[in-house]
Image 1 (cartoon, rainbow, N blue to C red):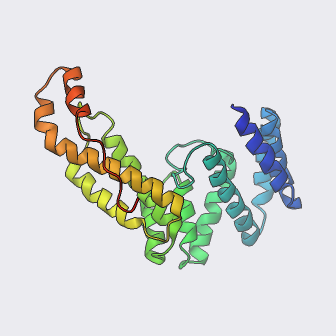
Image 2 (tube, rainbow, N blue to C red; image 1 turned 90 degrees about the horizontal axis):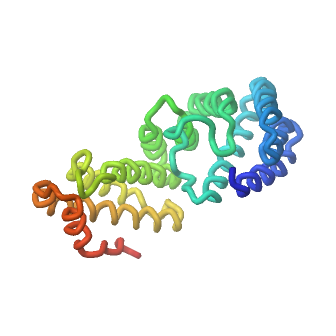
Image 3 (cartoon, rainbow, N blue to C red; image 1 turned 135 degrees about the vertical axis):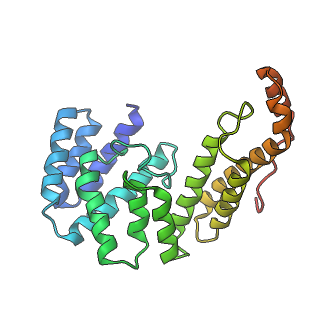
Length: 250
């Protein structure tokens, strides 16, 4: 583990220790920071068993704290806090798997049931629930509140990540259908309203513009590219394309 991870966990231990009932979780973070694996595993189990007995409001308070700091930790690692944490599997960056499965997800499901008009639990559940498709939760959050920026950013990022995978082998081949991807990218661009925080709006807008250009260029050049067997020749044609244009409003 890089030293940055240990610094993050040490910081979280301090933050968690401010809540006396979170002592097991604070010590989990502290143990992770000191690379005490057996102790951290024990503390995660002890915390989960204790927190399962808490009231809904207490579990909700911890869950919001944990998930919010999970986003902060991801940003400190150079990742986006809007990236689905359900697609990777396993434990989160700061959240042990047992806490995700026994505290976070059950609390979020209960939150959805008890406050059906609140978009926030649908957003968080889409980030963490391994059994469902993230996009559905993001769309439900936006349906409940079209101005809920985190869900708009997360759905735009989810779309972009999927299309980036489709374009992974270009110029050898394009997975999926470029025309469909262009339609999805148009949807993603429309999600980036003023409700989305400015840094995310700028970075996602730039990525969407780049992905759109790749899809458009593939449609223009695919007939020529697929007829060429030599990989270097294909790469040369692809590299000769004009540089991507800047996204609108940049």
